[in-house]
Length: 130
Image 1 (tube, rainbow, N blue to C red):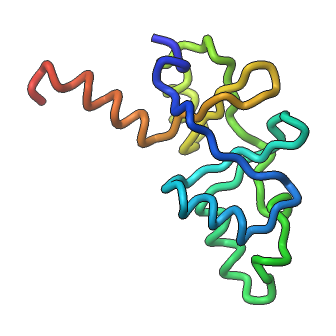
Image 2 (cartoon, rainbow, N blue to C red; image 1 turned 90 degrees about the vertical axis):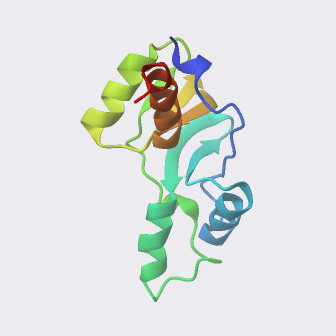
């Protein structure tokens, strides 16, 4: 099974210059916890809900005036569309990350999250009755 068979294809993104408030609004409106950060069509980072919590805890920062690039992670798990699902899940566990961005070259085309992994596990366990 390939990652592209199990990734979420509906992908919401933000730009590095977008505000943290805009990122929070995108996450809230779309019930997601991870947003790829894209510039000129290329993946340049990732911002998570946890990143927003940390930044919002810093009282001197205004989410309306603080850009995503100040909170995004540049060290992300990006995998090509043909990567085996088993490998992606193992890499996520090894790296202790909650998502992998699926890319076609440098362009993000999907996301696979820990929630997606739980759905796959539930399907695998269903026939066993566990």
